[in-house]
Length: 137
Image (cartoon, rainbow, N blue to C red; front, side, top):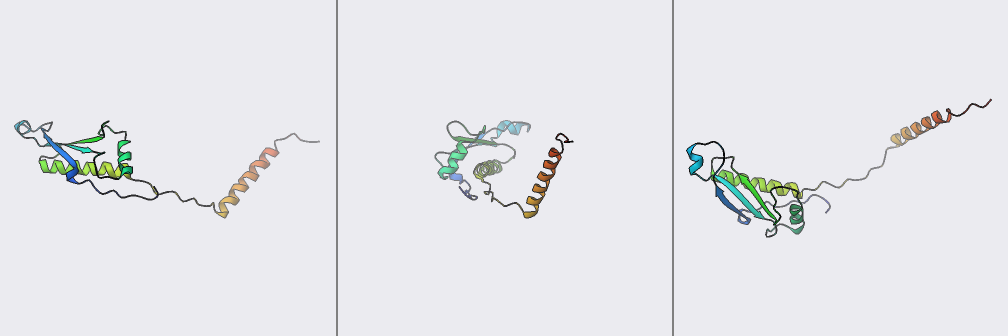
């Protein structure tokens, strides 16, 4: 798992859409037209690599069901096609977030100056503590 892995975006053939009525204001149009979209993506049946599937299934996210299906609702746009595109974009962003990996940290040595400053500080502290002892006559 070294390095950053790139995961291809999910194809539209791997998801299923169901059209529903959007919530919120909009007058009579809201009651007549089904412009909102529920996107369903089955993680286990997808073409993603196994390591990506494991990471998606391990997400502690409300949109991922126990059966391994991601459900995304998009209703922000007035157009059905725009809502579909928005839902797909959100799915791809979720997959990218779940599969992103940080670059491994490369260990570095402390500089010569930082070693000298550390040792000088230790010597000063040691001297301070040594002077706290009893005075010999």
